[in-house]
Image (cartoon, rainbow, N blue to C red; front, side):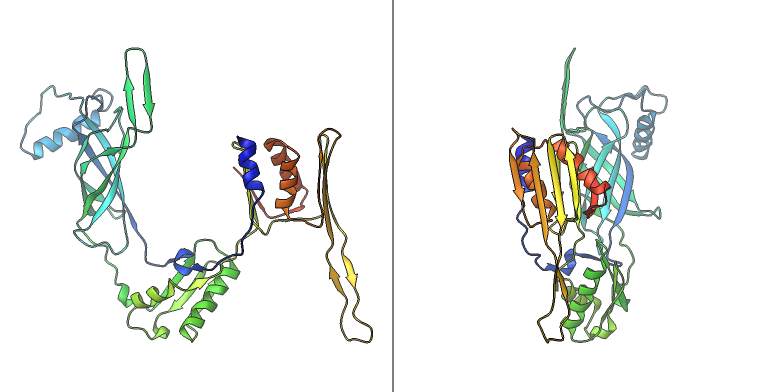
Length: 364
């Protein structure tokens, strides 16, 4: 199965890069979410809650909650098995308004076996500044199931964590005067000078004047006042749909556990020879100098001529790849010879160590 997967990946068909919307390439400075966290109690579990002896903090929060509701349990032997202490996390999206709802994630912090079927009791969610921005409550949808008997136990998924869709209501808004902005920065998700320059050029062309300036490989500054539009929201609504063709770095990603190799279209290798077992891999460069026409004022140019060959010992077959220094073709030839994924990865590591692989090499 691994060899079939590798064959599919190592025989790629690279299509021409297509333009991408700016909104899919950058993050707008100031337009961001905020993380929230809270500590709460889940009730209604079917005997799968915290053991009070091992999780005394569960008993403490439950006692405090009951006392706030007017029930005095001090001095009582109160050890139910249908209650669990949990952490509740959420992300407050940008421009979230009071009364809106957001999703929350609930995770057990004690020795509860499962949160399946439980109900989260009203839990305040705090921001990094300690203020309450939302309140969560609702029925938990667990992502797994567990069952056990006297001598066996089976667990599928993670039953000690779950989600509550739209389980929190926004109680406080993050103060941010978006309309007062005069400049806004576009932060590239993958910093690249070429892509940043293309974004600058595309925005200026769209507006017909110089409104964007590239500050560095990861930042483009947008002058909102120079756009002469009604509000920053109108400007970003126009900018985010401008199409730009991004530039990507040559990169090879190897997953040793599954034997998967993924590479970009711009990956190249220079002159190199590798011998591994009964296999020989050779890539040679033989550039040709072409002189100008007689009596012309031109200059001589160098035309690249490359040859790559892969051969195996007798009995293993042979594959020839001519006139190419594209790594995808080399890997395809190795795959055609039936080279094992582990050996192929070791060959790529050796080529990279020799300095002949002109790409970023990542191993997972």
